[in-house]
Amino acid sequence: RQLARRQPARRHLVRAQGEELVLVDVRAHPRILPCPLAARNTPQVERMPGVDAGFLYMETPTLHMHTIKVAVLDVSDVPAYRFDLIKEVLVDRLHLLPPFRRRVVEVPLMLNHPVWVEDHEVDADAHVVRHVLPPGAGMAELEDLVGEVASTPLDRSRPLWEMHVAEGLPDGR
Image (cartoon, rainbow, N blue to C red; front, top):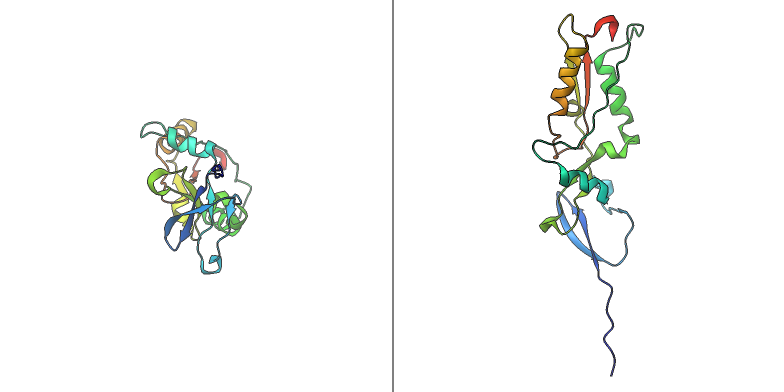
């Protein structure tokens, strides 16, 4: 009489098929799942690490888990500076920044952590925002703007990043 051997549990993965995500049973898999239809703009799907998922799970309507970085730049000696140039350079280099092209997609029935899905068409206008501070504005007005940005949750239907450019500080900053 043969003893029943315990079969290793199969892992559930999520694969993109068109605009839908479906569960796939596999025994072993790479971290990034190859997409056979990549030539037809089918998104790549990547498992979300537990740390990233933890930040999403801890977020509440009043406690946002995104981080804020502030840099004050002196562009007074940059004659070619313009806001559109920042956006153009970022869009030209976006292909070098895979995390900036990934958006969160929940796994059906919450069987696993959400996944990162590559977004082929990132809308730069939705991610790069221009703010013009009032004349005579100083650090207090900049701090108010930073507080407003920090208190606004990121839109989970698109990649989770934003760049806010505040213009109008004294001395060309």
